[in-house]
Length: 587
Ligand SMILES: [Zn+2]
Ligand SMILES: [Zn+2]
Image (tube, rainbow, N blue to C red; front, top):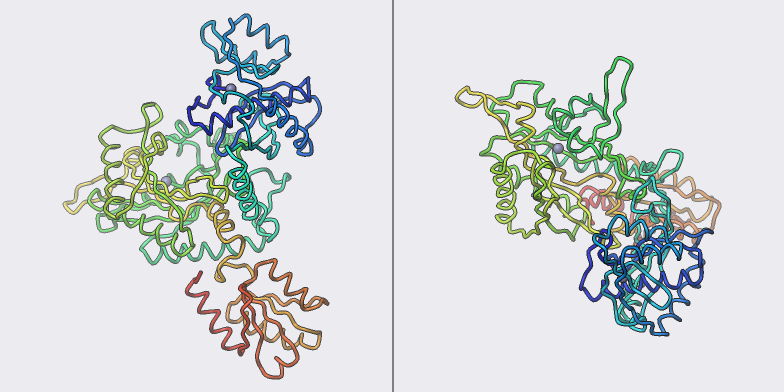
């Protein structure tokens, strides 16, 4: 419904088509469920939705019925007819129809006395258009799912039923899109996380607070080892700091003022002390920097930590591992002289590129995130922002990288480079960042002793090279569809003895592999070997080793990999081959 809500009215033909399909949906729903109240129905990426209040709960089983009514209305070729009513007429009309949400929108969103409405047959919507000429122009659509959504995104308001759908100019495009969705569904990290026993989310613990199960925790341990070792090799100093701090620390940093909506309420104690779950690691690392007098010889000082951060997200926005309320960030703060700044920014970008290459993050783009005109949202002088922005842009350009600009996406203390990646559903998210900051050094009065003995102020670079462990993991699950490279896979080898008679030999082989630090599982179940192989394949195990009587006699093992290529080799040769593959972190 056009300009009367948050999204902007668009001339894009796909948007117009999808928006018109949303009207068609609401028309069908109000025919089938005469007491349903309708909220808003905007186009979204790849489709549309409409929010309704039903007197009885609606489920996905009801969608085919609504869809066939939509098809019937589409064939009738009802025109979309605009009418301009006075405010009083519009109020009377929607009140007659019992449409309270529309009355609220008229009160809040419509200026002046003219209210634009659209008729589609009997159905009436508050809207400015534009639409397709008639419902016959809506040719290829499908309703996809239902979800709960608060009226106007406000948790204090009623929860409505949101029906999602998609609409395309032709059946062929619709079919292609549905195929893509099916493929994305197969890759979906929430689904795979369950199937492969990687992580779980439990209501008793809380939404957005995932639990890493043994398989997932193994992968995380490998990721963290890889990241920390690489950073140590690049001159980072790894620290450990607590998840909480006094709220005053965040008053000094400015987070308590400018980042408040993402922070948890403080824990207030009897003596008046206020402790805060940390939303970021920066202040802790600043205190580490200030724990000693620093000289120019100590710089650049790269303080790193895989630190837990706590950020409040509305429950409706939480998604698997991708949007959570607590996450561990591969974070670092580099304290350096202004002369060292460019080198440090480039070093941080290079490290992100290296991590991306090893981990297989092969499709990403850069966004240079700048501030917008809302002055009260940002700290610092125009001149400093410009310097920082120019430095980031120059670093990218000199490395031959192109970027887009994201206005208003900066951190409150400075601009940043965001590495944008896409999930299986093509939704873009930020995986890692490099930020230049002149503000926090100022607010915390950071110093170093320069060559001439004077006290100077360092510059700070905030950077997250591999992103948060949670987002990184969700990306990797979808990227590899659960078939992780051997070095990451929770179980690298499954041993499947043919009969009980081979159990002793299998145990010895398992021990031999474990000593070589290969993660091996012996499938000692009383099952046919075919079943054992099938189960291991479902878990996407890189190597399945079948041990039969002849193998034991000949001192060899029969190995099959994920591509179902089979080899016979000695245990020694196999261990040698696999440990090299793991050490090289081959994909
Ligand atoms: Zn409309
Ligand atoms: Zn930071």
